[in-house]
Image (tube, rainbow, N blue to C red; front, side):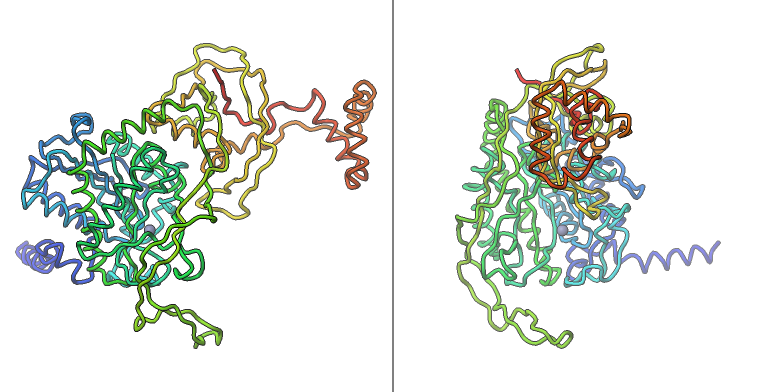
Length: 573
Ligand SMILES: [Zn+2]
């Protein structure tokens, strides 16, 4: 007994440094907190300042552990419905969605400790931190799964416990992590959201680069973000010693040819949060800078953003109210944004000369960035996106209850929806999927569709008591349209939730159908003409008896009306 007690003291002495060291000690030694350590740090802060902060368990994640949020509120109000949203804003920070990029995990501990210990907790801003979102990836630590990154000594892996990239999972929600995130996000309804990352790609002098949620798709709030919020953040970061640049999404191989805005569609964190009029930022600290600098620049950004929210809380609330008012009033919605390559801005860029030399490995030319030749110049910045199409918003969509996976995701997102009261037949606008492309290889567990073409017909369908009428209105209006209109890039259709309708259920035997086909041609002169024209103009068709019979079968009353009919119907006023 005494021996084991002595052993425990010894273990305690050796493990003591981790918990007695400050956050600065940790990251300055090129280390990042483990999941256990970061939660313990927040528990300690909660114990020290129980009136102003709370660590809350917030749903499950795929690896079986519980997700946490750490909430800081000056008045000790730790639930979303207890704070006065007409006077207070909410900032939600998500860390370690990619656990190999842990700057934000450590920066948020530094931020929380700084606010609490220096008595700086603001009275008009609630801070909600997700200490580590991808816990499964975060506990799967190694020295070197990010080949191009300079430290820390050990860090987590990108894939979660199911090998999902959680930063592609916000619409399809294959992970429990995503369900838990949506719960937190829709409960707190943050004014601003930040997802903390570390960059990949080019080498340059900037320690911090920033993805601002692409502003053209954000409507009214996009203008405010582009003209007021983001320029202030860039200016303040410079004053703090961090000349930030937009994320280096390069046009060519190096930044010299210019960069373009990253279009984060709804599958990405800030693309998802934008659906609900929440302004999103992705901090991308530069992968080759020392870990200490990455943590400190992330910390500086979070401090500066918080200060902006403290100073401009009323304005942020008013801008969002106006955005939601305008959003509610509009009857049209723009979809599938594309980069406009004909116009560009420019940014002041601090780079390193990109050069080529002969590779020792391949004997072919290889790229390198010459640190002995730093430069500063303007480079083109392509930051205008325009919609491909503008669609008319229906009064409501009908989602039959049979599509329960979609219904469950809509409910989880607190979408306005009511149930059909009794079985009945009704006329609706139904979209027939006439063309689409499918990815030939799996992408995040799916064979994604894209480039959907539809033909809309007004048809009579049977609805059952309990089917769902889903309304594109309220704060989830944009989310409803982007997920339910099959043409939208991240629609549930494109994510394979409705693939069953793409397969025909009943077929015909040619020798039986021959007689009916002949009769159809005899009695329907229009069909006969279309059939003969097709034979004349399409030699393959003319040579293939089965294809000809199938063409006529699809025109017959034997052909099932539900084949390729997208089962989310639209009802217009
Ligand atoms: Zn990342």
